[in-house]
Figure 1 (cartoon, rainbow, N blue to C red):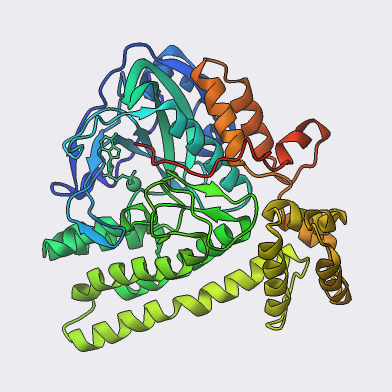
Figure 2 (spheres, rainbow, N blue to C red):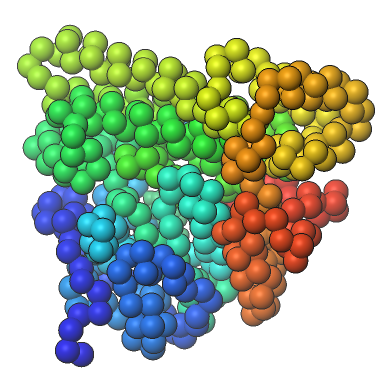
Length: 472
Ligand code: AMP
Ligand code: MG
């Protein structure tokens, strides 16, 4: 090889000891290609043909680290369902390194499912095909829908079985993120009282994600503002993250860690899918409050960096966290306003949105189809008793909606759970055609093509997926 196929520049690895453990991916028996995201490779300035070569495949499977890679497992802590876990870390992922795209943006290239690391505890460090396909399809849909998110560069099979109550095909996802630094990364150092590393991490995050921020408080405000936008996006798509633990909240504002996540079919604000979320802590309607809770953890980590006067630091950090609701409400109104075709919503429009959501909840109307139906004039069909909806529709029309605005805000299709499940079921048998078709369709989410009509349909009751599982 005359030149490195990937121009790595590993700023996180330069932070030095204590932030990570150098860990090579564990080679797998028989790498097999499933998906390569050529548009994303181009966006990163990577050579997609090289990624598709045998050498590229070896890298994507974790069998060979190319020149310039410095594989590391990152340390982090986290509050999981409200309880502190002081030591989590990359237990089934390895960061190969970072690349700087042609436009100057920096991205992590991470293998997920690449074998055990010092942070694996009792886990095997592996992923099975199901969660890999789910994360690929959902994260690429989110990107296409304009939601800040990690991306999927590739999915490969390992030729090895992964044991999850039963033997399942192993797989590795190549995840791309503007960074994998989490609220839990800050907690890791804060709970150890390691102020020097906490400060180095903060400086790193400011340089990388918030270059205009003035110190830790400015960074905190930046994270809060981005999370407000991201969660408003989720709400407007009927998305439920499912495990909003602080280790699964990226300080970049990107949606990260697609585990038991799902989109609602029939709308109800209390919807929960995750098998492990028995109390509904991370239900759809709870997500903004959970974001505040998580951001309060970040705020408390940063207080030691906010000056000598601790009382003033606490007051400033608290005020920053208390700023979330107003930012979130404004973002929510912009997103749901656009869904109603109101490019410049008025505060009074909130009542109009809420009236519709109440009608939808009472009727169990399909979230995606009802909003898209506002564009096509078919929304009434989502209501068994359409009269209250038709009253609402008259008031809405009197407000003068712009249907082009609504068409750009309401996807024709989402990666519905039962379709993801069908793609996984076929993938397990070696048939990836349904997965590729689903990815093609959900990465053109506003494109109403006849050939994809079936993917817009809600599940028949026999097809409905009501419970989702963590990727482990
Ligand atoms: P999650 O809830 O999926 O975000 O993961 C929480 C923690 O468990 C993280 O530290 C993961 O790295 C770790 N983990 C999850 N699955 C595995 C696995 N199969 N092997 C090792 N560690 C894992
Ligand atoms: Mg996680």
